[in-house]
Image (tube, rainbow, N blue to C red; front, side, top):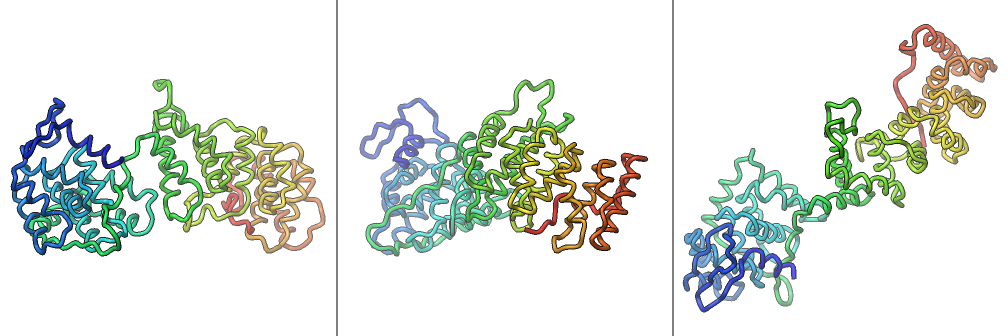
Length: 445
């Protein structure tokens, strides 16, 4: 059905007579339609996969020499059920600089042959033809590589680089097709059939849905990263305004992409996949949305130690960004943060207490003892720095909690540094405190 649909796009409505094809739709095709000559049709038949030695190369060279005059004949070949006839017709069509529906079908046929299949030599031949086609095929390569696995994904990525207009590969590939000795063969079992067409270029709404699905954790490396940055694009769409995500007085509504993306991002907070939940929360934080209870819950979850934020995964620090947003919205987040003080995760408890202190939450007795406890020496990286800095930012409300007898030299040292820092801030609110700038980083699991 897919091939029939594409074929109906490639050909206007035809009235067929022996050796004659006449367009009656009134629509001008991308390339001129010539009445196919008998020798062209004979050569097209010669492109089929059969047992006659040498006929394929002879037919290929003949149709290559015919150039644009063989256009209509090759269109028939693109719709063929014979794998070799369809492939070679697509290869020959690349020399005609196809456009529109011709380009779509040629591209999807060639890319389909990049995958692992039962044809010897087809992938290399398709790759040469794709490079010869150059820039116009790049959107189809991206569409095919997005969720592909194995050879197809790898080949699409490599060939995509070779099709760049900045690389002088197209002319060399085109010359290779001129002198090509066709050497492809079916090596599978049973009756050969053409490989499936590669995916069509998705519409804007289809692409947004694909990107949203890719935010979830899976085995494909890099797709969530690409999807995350694509969803972030709108965040920087209006750089002249004071705050990201604000569209300014001249725009009464956000761009079309944002209208499609934002509902999906909000829905992602309910996803069963942790990575998708976390990435959606970070995207909303970047858009500076008004906080909701559900967003707060996911941001509290982000305070737990996890694999996000490393060079091996997505380059974002979800705990740190979550902390920044919660500190900026401490009043709305207060109830959630106080619940988080009872979390099973030590990282969540420490970070929640730090955020409450930095936001100067009035219920100091609920979180100050935890912060003071972690000023003493232990095995948690940088917890004392985070807790000490947070108590300093709490200000004078922290001073009564620093009167306890220190447990060790480290805690005594931090008591003194915190007192000095509080005095510095009282004198100059912009004073630089004697703490490293670790933020919410570095807590152990």
